[in-house]
Structures are given as C-alpha cells and as structure tokens.
Length: 462
Image (cartoon, rainbow, N blue to C red):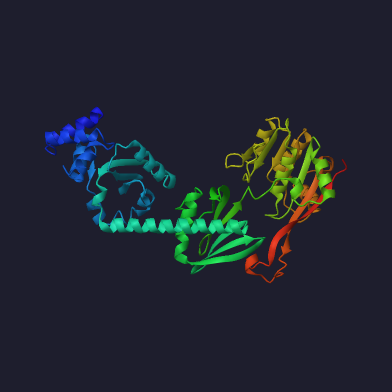
C-alpha cells in the first residue's frame, strides 16, 4: 500500500469511521486483492460509500458534492444533458456549468486516466469549455429518473449503432458508391446509388434522423452541435475483415440536414491499366505518353466516372525504382505505398502544395484537379521544367479540354508543346439481361447489372 493510502485509512480511524481492528482486517484483505483499501472497507460493510467519499474529500482537500440534490432539481437531466450524454461510459456526471467552466463529479478524482478521458471527451465536442473542475460525488445517489434516462440513451445508442452498421454493410454488399440520407417534412429517406442510379432503400420516421446524424457526425469527427453550416469528415468502417473509407458530408436544408456518404472501397478497385476496360489501341498510346519524361496528361469526365482510378492506374504503371512519385489530392482517395501523398487542407491549397512538391525533386506529379487559372499555369510550369504531370479537369467532352485550358488563361503554344494527351471517360450502364430495364430484386430494381468504361483519348505527336 502506498504511504498516502495508508495515511488515508488511518485518517478514517482518527475520524471514527473505522476501528483499529477493522483497519487490520482491511490491510490483511488487501494483501490478496487488487482493490484499494477504502473500497475493501466499503465492501466489508464497515462504512457507507457516502461516508467514505466525504472523508476522502476532506483528506485530499477536494469538494464533495451531494448529487441527489442536483438530480432532484432536474438540471442534470435537462440543461446539462448534452454534456452528460457523452460521459455515459466514464462514471462521471456534470452537475453544474457556468462561464465555459464545467463542474464534474466522479467517485475518484485522483484517477488521472479517468480525468484525462473525461477532458478529451468534453473538449472534442465542446471546445469552448476552457476549465473542468472535479469533485468527489456518489453516483449511486442520483435519482432513479436519471438512471432510467441514461439507460434509455444507452438502448437508443446501441440501436443506432446496430442499425447504422447494418445499413452501411448492406450498401457495400450492394456495390453502392454513395449513401444519401434525405430529410422531408415528416420522414427521412435513405437512398443507395447503385450503378449510377439512386435507389430508395428505406424510409424512417423523422425522429430517427437526429440520432442517426449524431452518430455519423461523432464517427466522422464533425461538430454535432452545428446544423446550419455544411461540414465534411471521414472515418473507416470494418467490413468483411477489411477497412472501407467513408467520406461524410452534411448540407443544411429547409427540413433538416441532408447527409451524403461516399464509399471508397479500395479493395474493390483494381489500379491496373489492363483491367480498366481501355481498348488495346488507346492503351498502347496511353503507355507511350506515360513513357515521356515531361509533359501534362489530362483526364476529364463526370463526377464518379472513375477519373481518379484511371490516374492511380497510370501511377501504378509508372511505379518503378528510381521514380519519385508525389501527389496532391482533395481528398486522398486511396493510399499508395509507392507515392508520397499530400491532402489539400485549409492551410495549404493547390498552389502552395505544388510549390512545395517542386522543391522535393519529383519525377511524376499527380494533381487531384485543375480548377482555376493559377493551378493550370502551375501545372504547365511543372511540365515545362522536366516533370510528368497527371491531373483531371472538368469539361463536357474530349474536345472541350483545350477550350477549357484557354478559358483558364493557358496560351495555345503552351498547350501544343506540353499537353501530351487528353482523355475523356464515362461509365455507361450495362442492362440486366433478365429484366432489361424493368427492374427486379436481383438488380435492386435498377434494370442495370453494372457499368462499362467508354474511354476516348487524343494524343499529341510523340
């Protein structure tokens, strides 16, 4: 037993809470137990937990809080509920709050690990809290109404976890690329995007939406208290012993927050030029372009048409010893162990990112997207100075790529000299032969059984 713990037990004797004989019994029991001496005394019914905590508070010069009083006035179950909901598993309760300070009762304020866990949980969701004060408190003295409410929250939480996990699992099994949670006036609708089509999967009562959104926000690191501003985040979901990346974004609407989840199943996508579905003639030309030491290669297509997958397959083809491959993406969609990948952030945009990459002696540079004049000019500057640059650009077709570069202020002679090739791709639906567009359970009512790649390429004279 530590000296301070021994002093505490002797303090119990001096205050009349224990007799000398009882203290000796506690010390004897402690030799074969992992429990603390004061806990052993309570379990032997030598004193009540309340009496023990009050004397411990005096001994350590800390405050003791009568939680029964705070629970009876209803504050813990109402005004402070938002804090206590996130402390369900941490054996602690917020009993007061004022001026960005929280007052929290725990049964052992000396437990450093517990206090750190409480601080981390509070600061994650309530960063405005600048001070947390701990006190001794007997959580057993909380009213039955409080315990009943917390139990109900646990049940709801477990139901939400199970429901959400099952939905995401089903979306992945269906091969969905996205999940949409859309609020209406009285209901909330869940859609899966399968083979490019939105398919209604489930409709809930409106009340279910708030709990579902809160769970998704917590998982993806979003602010659960913010509902009027768009947010975005991500988390990993374990599916069939593999991790699937989920990109979560929220958008405020007149009926509540709409939520979209992009499913990035890296194990499902094969980054190999041979398996993209590119015809042999275009594949041969594409490989000739990739063999060049410098220049710019651009791919265009609609959102979700697989542009990034094509660029990753190009990088995989270039993956040889002696090549320094670097990427700048928004966001990084898949981790490539042979490349140095960087994600756009609030502090670093494409321009600063490209400048930084150029100082790293790269051979190959992948830019997630050319979206403005400055990025376009920096991409061509990198191509001019001996680097092979790959990127995407938004246009309506293959011929629109050069026109788009002109809109972005890139001079025609620069395009002619340094643009190695332009690519345009789209995913065309493959009709389900059994029902041919009528829809059936096997194709989830879409009438489709997959999509095929329509790939166009226009190369410069190499």
